[in-house]
Amino acid sequence: MRRTLPAVSTALLLALTSCTTPGSAGAPPTASPVPAATPTASRQDATQVEQTMASLRRVDDLPLYEMTYVGAYDPTVGTDAAAPSPFGCSLFVAAGDPERPVFARNFDWDANPALVLRTDPPDGYASLSLVDISYLGVGADPAGDRRLLNAPLLPFDGMNERGLAVGLAADDAATARPVPGRPTVGSVRILRLVLDRAATVDEAIAVFSGHNLDFDGGPPLHYLLADATGASAVIEFVDGELRVERGTGGWRALTNVPVVGVPEQRRRTDRRYGQIAAALTDADAVLDVAAAHRLLAAVRQGHTRWSVTYGLRSGEVRLVTATGAGERRYHLPMS
Image (tube, rainbow, N blue to C red; front, top):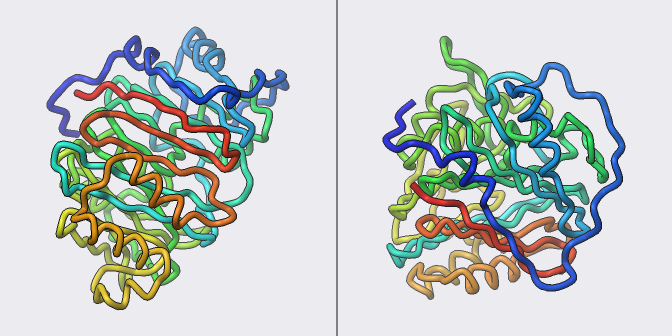
């Protein structure tokens, strides 16, 4: 792994702050311990486990939780999850202003609880990610449930301290053919490896290229990547092979239709893709965070669970959930 700067310390990660409009935070959950999953990715000592579980708090009625993972984990073992069925997702990068590139994403899926997760592994980059905790077997009241210690393994989108962001969406046309000699990793788990190990789009592509992806148990996926320079790329699996299309014109969009090798006019026949592409083209790919959230709202669906923007240079993360309870803001210290 190439890491040119040290990770943010655990103390700094614990200092990540959040705020919301009045009335959006829910009451603390009632404890109902559940045995830990086996095997577990945790490489924590007892004190770190206690600190991690004590950091859990409910912040809105989605329900949405926040948790800071303290200590180490092994990203190659433990829970694997079937990917979400293709109810849709919408993602885009707006990098027309090189000082304010933004990565934006709607996650459209079932009414499951979610978690805002902070991690700072000793051998990887600090990151903030969002997890649908139902894929850990965790219910709406997760207090005391040590299966949450596997939460780092299942980020559905996120950004690390170097400004590298990644998200996924279903792509029914994708097929992944294994390459002999490469380790196999789950199609959601690969996002954790990218967040921990990659500082740039090129490095993220290298992480994908070094692994076989397992789409068993869920629909095949494609992925959107972006970094603090404004570089972006879509990764898809076409006829069994990994293919990459890099961003052009300062923006890149992804919904649930293939884009690699597909003419732009054909892509825009998809309603959500077409609406995003038209807005970004009209704006010359320059959107502030408020405008990015307005565009996410314009393409949201009845089953959109969260809308999130990642400031790839600022480290600012803004999150809105389906509850309509207000915007939550976080800051990830950038290195």
